[in-house]
Image (cartoon, rainbow, N blue to C red):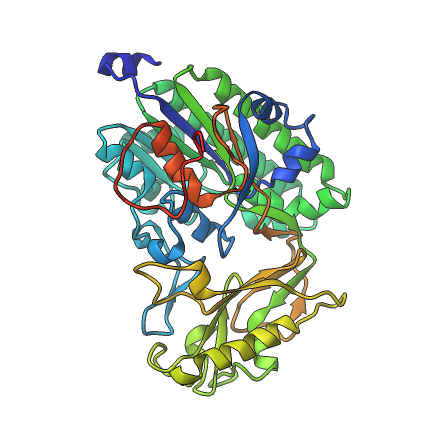
Length: 448
């Protein structure tokens, strides 16, 4: 127990959560020499595979992980969402998350929370102790919750995200250096505020892991040019996790978790081009680049990642699929998707989920009708222009995976077997003895 906690007279357990965006469980399991600290945590605490959500994209995953409910309740389904009753789309930010965040529950219980670099949290909240918004924040000035926090970030050369454009270069040297600099600065700021010892919940996310995976995972999987640099990056991350663990007292539980897994990317699948080729989607002119450019003969369209919508009468502004034909048309679309095979002859869609089976809540007006979980190697894209082929290749060689995210904890009493993202928030609340009458889509893993 730290000085400030003793002065407050509190004796409740505290939690440090470290997010490692997109780190797969198998990567850690296969390289105990690289992940010495995580391996030790698994041996002395709890560890296991964590199932992600549908769809397994960071913009949807982090709101669900930090609320304990599905996108039907959070209102965030992906990197791009559709306005209700419109073909206009927007990029979801923190203000679009409708469900109550974990740290707000902690604050409502009279405790303090420090929240750093969590995706989909812009603008920063004024309700909690301190916050730095993560992924998609426009800059440090806007991401920091107050001037004191902003000064700390500037002094430590903090950056919100890795410069992903550098990953597009054939020579990945600058990208790797930028990823390390981002990781180092993130750790520096994390430890600065951890040392303040004035929080009850510390929630910080390392997102540079996701960026490194997108551009170097193929090298790792195939022992390619940058395979050793890939593992060296993770060796540094593990050392930082170990140093944070060693700095914590016995009344603080450390949890490390990823929001989705990762695997090698072989082909980008341009879903709207597939729909156009199969007669499901068409445009009102040749100059098209957004959902608003579809014409009134379109029966279906797609948004990333792998979300498919029928152009339904009464829901879409110019819907053409009659409500009474909904199930028949959806079955037809499902059958066409099931028939899609890649250049190597493999089936692209490993699993197709009906929207109502994945999403439930007050914000299902923009829920997709079908969600595709692709086979490994097929990354589902949904642009509305610029692609003439269904299968293309790009600069990335790593892609998100539904299975294979992870959860490690210093508390040996967590039962991680069979767990998923929805379990994280109720578990942390249970560890901190924060009570709530609200229902979650997950359960506490403590003594489960």
